[in-house]
Image (cartoon, rainbow, N blue to C red):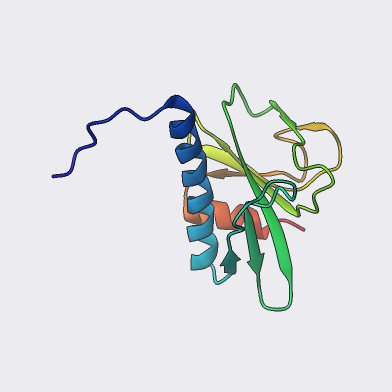
Length: 132
């Protein structure tokens, strides 16, 4: 069996974990029938995932946080980037929120209109489909 025998640098490991959340969302959306595109580089546009149903395209930003609770404040790091949807995962738990991108500098994670999900495909898609 393969075994990893080298240490991964802390920043590299964090980037790998963050990318794994993006991959999870990509997989769930593809299984739901969305066309999924991954930008080569998302700096400036803050778009981690681009999805389409054919005629329409939507930009998604995936965030991860160390959650101390669901009333935690989420900072808007996608301001003026044309992002449509934000998916936020609690790294230290098994839940997250999906929400329309907001214009304020910060907002509570459990704000009205933000949909909570357990970290699984069915729960995520149920919350994703509730977005208006």
